[in-house]
Amino acid sequence: MLEAIKDIGSLKIKQGDKDILEILLQDPNANGSYNKVAAIILEESQGIFNFVDVELEDYNSDKIFSYLFRRGNSRESNYSLTAILTEPSKTMRTKFLGWFSALWKIKNLPLKDEEIIYLKQIQKTLENEESTIISRISNIKSQMGKEGFIITLKIRTEEKDCYIGEISLFRFLLKYLVDKKDAKVFSTDKMCSLCGEIKDTVIGNLGTYKFYTLDKPGFITGGFNEKNAWKNFPVCLECKLEIEEGRKYVQSNLLFSFCGLSYFLIPKFLWGKEDTLNEVLDILVNTTKRISLKEKIVNSSIDDEEEILDVLKEVNDNVALYFLFIDNRNKLSAAEKIQLLIEDVFPSHLRTIFNAKRWVDEKFETPFHFSTIRKFFKRSDPKSKNDDLDKYFLEIINKIFKFKRIEIEFLEKFLMKGIRIAWIKDLYFHSSVQDAMKVLLFMEHLDLIDMEVKEMELNKFDVIFERYGNQFRTPLKRGLLLLGTLTELLLRKQYSERSAKPFMKQLKNLKMTEKDFKGLLPKVQNKLEEYDSYDTGKRRIAKAAADYLLQSEDIWNLSLDEMNFYFCAGMNLADEICSIVYDKEEKPNGTGE
Image 1: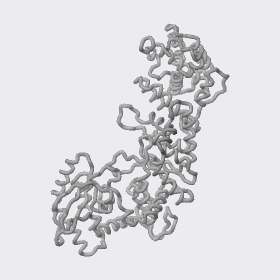
Image 2: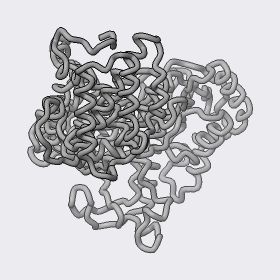
Image 3: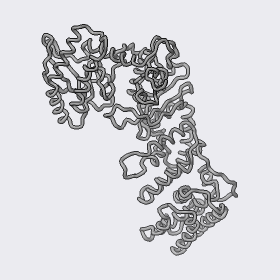
Image 4: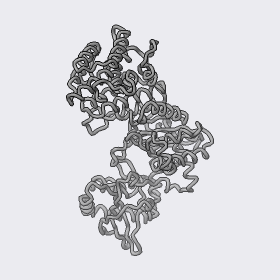
C-alpha cells in the first residue's frame, strides 16, 4: 500500500514541481474542524519582544506556508510554533514552551549566535506572559464553545505582522527538526524497501502513518533494540518525501464513504504506471462530476456510494485497488486506527461483484445494495447509539471483495435477528425478509456460501423455487416456505375480520423449534377451517407443504435461525405462491386480497 501511495506522491511532486517544505507542511484544518486561528502577537523592538494580545482570525487555506504546521507526537511539541488547541495550559506548555525546551537539548544546533538570542528572547517573553496568554486563550475558548481552533505565533514589526512561516529561521528549523527525527533510527549504504535502490541513508522510523510506530515491541526487530529497527522497514529520504506527498493527496482526494464508514481508495499500478495513474486518479477525483442526472436515473440501481466502484470495474486489470478503512469518528484525535485493509482488488473482481448484484436485482422490485447487508450488521441493539457490528460487517465485505467463503450459519444468525426485530415491532417485516433473501442470493451467486441441493420431483411451485437459485433446493426448506405462506394467509384473514392477528402468539417471536414447526401445520389448517377460509388454493399449499416435510429426514439438519428464516421467506412470498394456485381473477378466500 505504501508503494502505491509513494507512486502517487512521486507523480504529484513531478507535476507540481514542489519543494521540500511544501511537501512537509500539513493542513491543520484538513478535517474541517478548525476554522479559526488564535494568533499570539509579540511586538519586536530592538531585539526585545513584548506581548500584545491574542487575536482571533478566520482560518485561510491559502496560508498553509504562513501557519507552518507539522504535527509532532501528541505528548511532545510540534515541529514549529503552531498547534491545534486542546487545553490552553497544556497546549501552551507542551507545544510552545516545550518546543524551545526540546530545541535547546539538541547538541551542535546549527544556528548563529544572533539567531539563538532571537529565539531565547521570544521564549523569555512567552514564559513571562504565560499566565496572561493562557487566560486570553481560555476566554476565546469559552466564547467559541465546542468549535476548535488553531494557535500560532505572529511577530509584529514596524513594517508588518509576520506569521512564523514568513520568517526564514522558523522555516529552516522545521526542516532541520524533521531531518533530525528521521536520523534517529537510520543506517547507511543500505537498500530502500520501496524503490529497491542502495541509498546513502535509509531510515527506520517512518512516521507518515501513525499506525506504524516503534514504541511497541511488536514493531522492533533485532532483540528489541531500536537502533536495529531500520531493518524492519528501511526507507530512503526521497521515498519518504514521496510518501508524504502521496498521503496528502490521498487524504484530500481519495476519501469515500461506504455504508456510513469512511475509507481511502488507493490505486496500485502494475505496469504503464504514469499514464494509468493519471487516468485512474482522474476517474477517482472526477467521477461524481462526470455522471449526468440522466445517467443516474437510468442507472438508479447503483447508489451514490457504489458509483465509484461501478465506474472502476471497467478499468483494465493493470491496476489493483486498496480499500483502507480507518476509524476517524473522533475528529479531534490524531490517532489512526485501521479497521480493515483490503488488498489487491482488481477491476475484474468488481465486475463479477456487480454482475451478481444485477442478477439479484432482476429477482426483486427494489435493487440490492451493500447497504442491504449493512442493515443486518450495524447495531446489535437497535436502541444503542453505537455501531458495534462494524467489525463483522467489514469482515463480510473483505470476504466478498476477496471471494472467500462465508459460514451461512453466521449470516443467518444476524439476518434472523434483524427479521425478528422487525416482526416484534411490526415494522417493515416483509421488506426485512426480502432484504435477507437478497443477501443470501447475492452470496450464493458469488459462490461464497454453501447451499444444500437435493434432487426432487417436479412440482407446480418449481417456477418460484427456481427463481431464487439454490435457496430452496431441499424438501425441508420448501416445506417450511410453504408453511410460512399458509400461515401468512391465515394472519391476513384474521386481520381482515378482527383487525388483529392473535395467531402470531403461536409463532413465538420467530424462535420456533423443530417440534414447534411439526405441530404448526395442523394448527394453521384448523384455524383456517374455523374462519371458513380453507379453500382449494390453501389446501393445495398445505398438501405440498406436508409432502415436502414428510420427504425430509426424521431429524432436521437446520439450525433454529435457518428454520425460521425459510418460514419467514414463505410469508414474504405469499403473493407469488398464490399466483400459482389461484386464477388471475380469483383471490384467496377471505384474505382481503
